[in-house]
Image 1 (cartoon, rainbow, N blue to C red):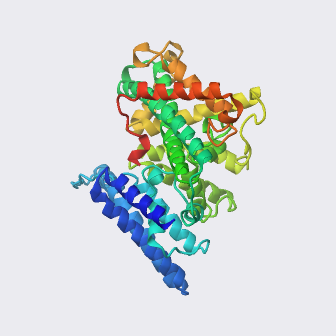
Image 2: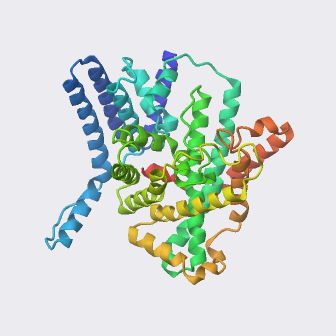
Image 3: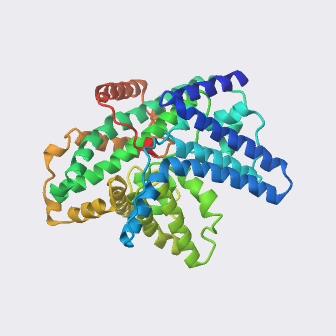
Length: 454
């Protein structure tokens, strides 16, 4: 087990170093800081000393994250504010390289320190085990955001090769590759072209771009998560599930329980609940809701459009929270049935529409562009035929295929999990072969993962 962990830790650092070896020092420092801080917090009997070490860890981690990710944003925003006030300022921005995955491994370390501070776990004394927890390569650059309570026990116990887990992991990797390389990257070509010419296109074409971006970001990010979870399973690890078929949600609250689950639950446990959660007064509940979604938007990027996206989702979900309807629809839609009811179908379509409008703010370069984009969609030209030169007709096959496979597999942990149990070997292998061929055919031009920028 010790040899396995050393090998995986070295491999993970090599994996990260292939992007830029210089930032290995930042990863190592962040890891050492939280490892040492966790021990100091645990070993102290003084509440004051424990709090001081917690503040040191949080301030240092968020300081690095703030510098690399948000320094230029704050400088530019402050300069703009001074200009509005009639006092022009001239501040220099820096040409800063954003370290890949810094938001993810920073949150790994913070969750570990918080859990020790609140006495949910005890600190680890083996630096290799802890370093592997932070740097494990499948989740290092784009999540899921793991909890020490979930992953560290797996790091610390012997692991043996399991053929069934290996097959299951490869199956999930294959489906993730299809979602990313075939569906998401094909959507990206159309989305990029339409957003680049959004001011001159008809409403129907803009609406198509919004829908295709919703498909793109899901295929891109959930595809990465499938690849990460499948890769981890090859080595005997079970990572946290990050997506649970979010586009089959019947309300916004259900959507956020199923989208980027590891981040949503992180903010819930370490920010929303400590602020009072839903147990405070009505005004405080509304404030807490807006805080968590605004911070979530800001986590995604140093741009006002991400903050606007977060606040828009806060507006969406607030009525559900106020009327205590946010805990409805806990089970997957149409469980045990082939098709949804008409009411469920309308609920899914309405939720999808709200989410898609939100994604326009996420994808746009500015709030102004997003507002113009949304307004232009709902012009009379919405009812015209989309301009065919801006999208591939192949998407008319790929997008429905994605949703059909996901619908029939929605009761599993991922779309193809139950596929192996229900189908004959000939049908299974024929479909696997089809997916492999599609991935090879579409793996020409590289499209970077969207969440690498976060």
